[in-house]
Each structure stands twice: as structure tokens, then as C-alpha cells.
Image (cartoon, rainbow, N blue to C red; front, side):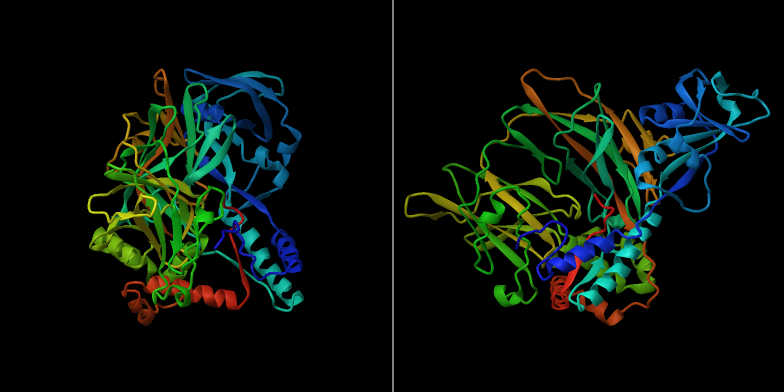
Length: 570
């Protein structure tokens, strides 16, 4: 029931793990590719400056570092200095194929921008010259970015082949499964000083245009630098991302409370969250020790039908809370995330569509979103929440999918009108809430409830001051409004760097920051096999996807396999 980070190690010997670790890193290579900007503008160079890029100036067969560069009017100025030693081997590169770099050189390589001069309209330069160049003399720029797709192959293939060797050495006791079908959402990284830190995924599960939705990602600890917040949104895996809106919510609130938005964007204050008095699984296990602290020891909703008695392999957690007199609403607070296993299982489901998967995605994009969302609920793919009433269990709402790469804190208001209130022998009153998930679809790290009244907060909705892609394209307007204009990230490695201005401080108030986005994404898959129509029909039955997950996991464990995450992921 505990989450052992990314690798499940229940049935692996220490020797096998060591061998698996070693072969996973044999032959790993790093690649970069070139993105070309045909028309270089002052804004491109200003963006390079804000990202601390190294400018390399090319004239004929000569190349220099442009040191101390600046932009004034339509002129680029600076001093030509000798290229740093570790830049020489990357001075020129192939535009059509992936180019390798050493791991130790990654900072140098991935921070280079090469400017090529039109030699017919500028004089011949030499080292040490102080130059002023009109932008019309720069006929193109080349930007080096990580070739994540090619790098992934260099990691994955040695891992799989090497693991086959391990299986032989270890008498077939261990095999590695790498999640090549890994799906994800747009990845968000926040900037502090000069580095970016992974913060989470946005609008998880919105994998068809019909499922486009809003999302509010908490950014705890995100602080402005020189009155500016900077973050980036990236495409890390084979998918196309359609980002409609990306605004920053800066919430000013009393310092002694925490604030969280629910899935509809309503801000709630958390003053005194109360842990459950009891937390019992459908298999009668005491789960309270797993969910009382945010420590990555999680309940994985992984009890078998033999234990729970549920033929669909649904897993249920019953939470009992003491309720104060006069309370009419509770705010359920959880720290949870989608599991890697659930993500892998969904990838296995998509394989059943074979060569018609893209056709299915297009059809889903035109279908009523209510039908798709209902199918998800019938399979318990979202995390479902129920309140016990005198008439039985009443559905309250669900927590949306958030992706498998980062858990987040979430809140849900639970109206207590009609709740079944039970008394205890010592005079306390209790209310029960249940959480329900398909087999191993969620990891729950923490659960509590707050009965306090929401306090007044000020929400400043900040539009991007600038949003520039890794190639220098300005997409600020595309991200500023909820409309039908999208910033589209089509390839692995595409990034959007977004800057927001800080809001005025309010005396005596603390700030919490959230990224409000809207959008969707589609997976890029190329399955050569014909669709398995007979098996696909079975997934129309409620609970079939959960049972599919359980059956696959059982087979997985019977073969004594180890589930290994993609090593590139944050």
C-alpha cells in the first residue's frame, strides 16, 4: 500500500537491482537539435538576454562570442571575443539530424544562440572588435535545444536490451518495463534565480478537444525576482498541446491560513484541518498511518477483489471525522496524484485501437464531453467523493485527473445538509466521507477536513507581461484570454517562457500563487496493429477499465517484473 517512489521493488533481489541500475545507464547519450529563426528581431535578442544565452556571431568561416551585447533601437552591439574552449566543438552543427553532446557540456550547449551575418553588407570583423550591427544584416539565427525524443531513445533502448541481459544473468527473475506509452500533460517549471524547478502538470486528462478545461495549479514557494514571476510550460512527451490561457492568480490572504482553489476556481481558506478519527479501506485495513502526514507513504487503492469483494476491483476508503456543533460545510483537503501505473494502463487501453487510434481521437473531439466524463466516472478514473446520508451514500463531486508526475494539494467543499451524523460514547458527533478509485489509479498521501468559514481574500488575476517560445516567437496574446486562439506545442522539447508582474503588497497579508490555465492536449501514437474491436466493446461496461488494470497488474507481478519510469521525467 505504500508508494516506493518510481520503482516497485517487492520481488527484486538486491543483486538484480544493482545490475538493472547499471545497464540502465550504459550507452545513454544526449542529443540536441537546431531551431532556425529566419527573421531576427530586437525582441529575440532581449529574450536571449533574459535567459542568459550565449551569443555566437558567425561571419564567413569565423565565429566569436559576442560579449557584453546590448540592443539599442534596431542595432545590436558588443565586443567580439574568442569562443570558450568547450564551445568550439559545437560551433557548427547539422540542421537535419540529432547532434550529440557530452552530459557535462549541457549548460554550454543548450544556452547557445548562433547569429549568421549577411557578409555582403558588413565589413570583415576580427577578434577584439567592438561592433554595431543593424538587424537587417543578421540573416538567420540558430538556437540549440535538447532533442528529447532522440535522447529518450538512447536511454530507453539500452535499458530494455540491458535488462534482457539482467534477466539472463538473474535466471529470468527480473525484467524491466519502460513506460513507452507514457502520456502526460503540459509540464510547468518555475524559475528561482537562474534555474527552473518542476512544479506540476496542467489540465490532466483533457486529451480530446471536447475535454478542454480550466485548471489551477498551486505554486507553493514561488517568489518574485525583481518584481517578476517567471515560469515555463514545456512539451515533454509525444503529444500536441493546445494552451488557450495561462494567467497567474496571486491571492492575498491572512498569514495564518492556507488558501486553495477548488476545481471550479473558487478560493477556500484552510485554518484548522482535522485528520480523520478513522480511515478504513474496503478491505478492513487501517489506512490512517498512511494518510496522516505528507510523506509520500501513500494509500495506492491497490486491494484486490478477493479482499474487497468488488468484482470491478474498485477500491474504497472510508473516512470518519469529528464534526463540531453548528457546522454546515466541511472542506475536504487531500494531497494526491495519479499513479504511474494508472497512466501505463491507459496507454495499454489506447493500444487496443491500433491503427484507428487517431480516428478515435478525432471522433472523441466531436463527441459530447458529458458522455466521455461519465465514462471516466463509471470506471472510477477520477477520484470520487461521497457523503454518507440517511438515504445512503450521496455523490458529492470528483477530483480531476492531474497527471502522474506530481501530487498536489486539492480542496473540495462538502455540504453537510442531510449528512448522517452519528454519536460516540463520549458525546462527540461524527460524519463519514468515502473516496473511491479504480484499481491503482490514484496515490493518496494525506486527507483532512476543515470546518471553518471561508475568509475574505483578494485575488489578482495577472495576464502575461510576455510569453516567448524557445525560438523567440511571441505568444503573449495567445495566452492572455480564454478564446479560441491557442499556443500550440507540437513537438517534444518546445517551451514557452512566461513572465508575470507582481501585484501590489497588502499590509498584513501573505501571498499564495496559482497558475490558472485552460486547454487540452492529444497523444501522438502510431500503432500498426488492427483494432481489437471485441475487447474494446467490453470497456463500455462500467468498471471494466478498473478490472483491466487489476488483471494487467496481476499478470505483471506474476512475471516478477519491475515497473521503471522514463528517466527523463521530472
